[in-house]
Length: 123
Image (cartoon, rainbow, N blue to C red; front, side, top):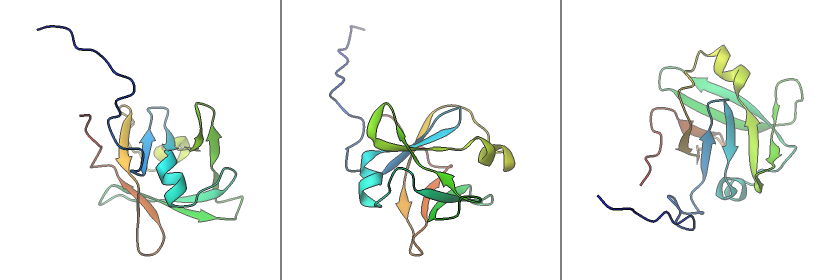
C-alpha cells in the first residue's frame, strides 16, 4: 500500500453542520455552525439535562448563575464555544472513552440535544 497525502483543507464535515465535539477531559466544543444557527454567545449560561434511558444530553440557555454552566470562547478557534462537562459526566456516570463528535439538534421546545449513542463517523 502506498502513501496517501493528508490535506488539512479537506474537512470531514461541512462547516454548516451544527456539531458538538466532546473530548475525554470532558469538554464540549460547539462548532461555528452551531453557534450561528442557535444564536449562542460567549458568557451565556446553559443548563444541562440527561436522559439516561435514551443516552441523550440536552442544553438549554438560562440566566441563573447557580444552575447554569458558562459558555466560553475557545482559544483554538474564536468562533467556537466551550462548556465544561466534568461534573455533569461524573454525576450521571457517563463513560469518557475518547474524543467524539455529535450532531447538535434543536428540539421543538428549544432544547439543544446530542445523542451519545450516535457519534459521527470519520470519512
